[in-house]
Image (cartoon, rainbow, N blue to C red; front, side, top):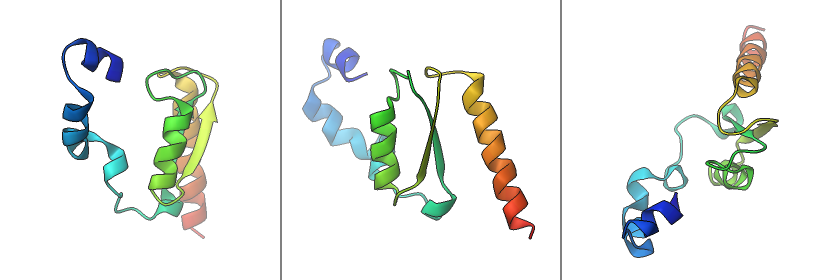
Length: 93
């Protein structure tokens, strides 16, 4: 994304100046970090695993799970639904 922006005349300084408006790294979720799960695709070139791990760290060590897919795929959805089921089963006891 940064390459495309730079290619169209958007400088790194402009990106930095406005990052707080769009970057999830600049905000802390109100949900406690132990309840946050970030699911990434191993082959994702839009949201690479390293960037998602950095996000998890910035969000207070949120849990990171990785599935064998790119940016979009059904494996992440299955993983998310399984995590939701696991959470709901744990909260009912």
